[in-house]
Image (cartoon, rainbow, N blue to C red; front, side, top):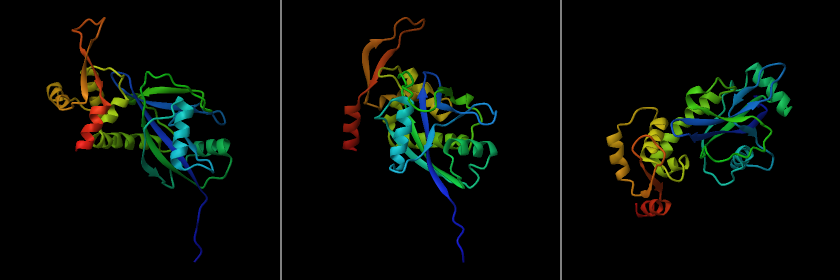
Length: 238
């Protein structure tokens, strides 16, 4: 019996989260227009090079878009549906961008967190990159909306396993209100502030600073910092 093998290509796609004090944002790129279609936003990604493994490719994509080399990346799922690249516009773009006849495009999805106030150094072919609020995400090509939705579930699982990752999204000094809004954004639901303060009180690695907010119309809130040394000791003791 003859086996019906197909010509398959492997890519990576990265969901890069940032937080701007009130809402989660996703870093999106615009792919070049083909045959008069308008440029549309998508998740940053790439086919992998011959000499790369998938982790290398994901780190390359992240560096080309942000200039950041050392950042946490989490591989969370492979997307391999036969239908994920069958839209005619997507096929035209693939043929223009990569030329080969791609029968099946399998992608490995990665999740990353980035401080949104960090200056991004884009050296990629995608000259138009921007942070897009999570509630304003457009309809994206391929299955990128599905990948984004899966990444939100993954980030919640990641936090349960490693709570320290939320501080990758916050400034080095932050208020409890900022931390509270970040948790609400990640879980997409309101969280009782009194219970949240009780939760933070158990986090000995969230250390108060002497500094308070200035130039605000309300009562100045105290700043806090994430103490990585205390957190790592706590993990070791557990």
